[in-house]
Structure formats: C-alpha cells, structure tokens
Length: 132
Image 1 (cartoon, helix red, strand yellow):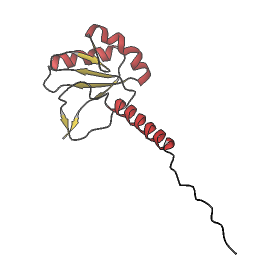
Image 2 (cartoon, helix red, strand yellow):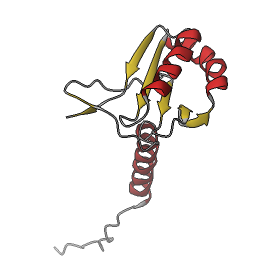
Image 3 (tube, one colour):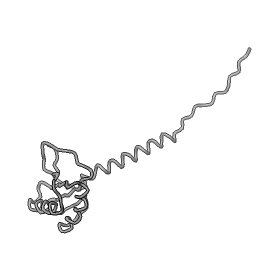
Image 4 (tube, one colour):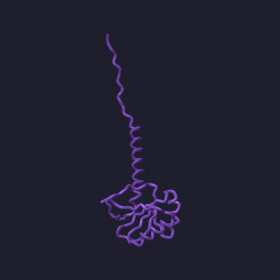
C-alpha cells in the first residue's frame, strides 16, 4: 500500500502583532521619559546633601536661578504673580511646596520666594538638593 504525502505549506510568521507591541513599548517609554524630565528642565546647580528623597509628582515646584529669575513648574513668572499662581496649587498639594535654588544664587532672592510661598498658604517646603 502506498502512502500519499500532502504538500506541506510553508510556515509564515505574522509581524503585525510584534510591530504593535514594539510601538506600544515605544510610546510608553516616550511618555515616561517626558514625565521624569520635568525636574531637570532648568539648568540649576543644586547644593549637595548626603540624604536625598525622590520628588513627589504632584508637588508645585518653584525654582530660582542664579540671576534671580523665578520659575513655577518650569514656566517663568514674576515675584508679584507667583503668590496668585501658587494658591490653587498649594490647596491641592496639602501645603507642601518644592523649592529648588541654584547654590550660587543670592540668598535674598530665595528668602523673598520663601516669604511669598508662606503668604500663599505654603506650610512646608521640600528643598531640592543633589546627592553627594
């Protein structure tokens, strides 16, 4: 008795699901890298500290440069507008405000910003530092 052999069809690989997964991973990494880069948008030379804590994402962040320019969450503002802009943000953060200041900046500018934060309702400050 003779056996009949069927013609075998070649095995193919479908690339569409693999492309979908790769694109989803790419989108995920692009989104997470943009969120992590929020803190480092301004070129500040932060003071060094032996103990550091990770940044809280919903924290309003006030930055003071060497020249005395003030930024709120990465956008430049003036000292007169800072208080009004901070009030709603402080209400949602529970009174906690992040303050990053260049270590070569003037002490007076930082104290002015701290005073405005206090008047806007800020009860606690999280000072920005870099690890040793």
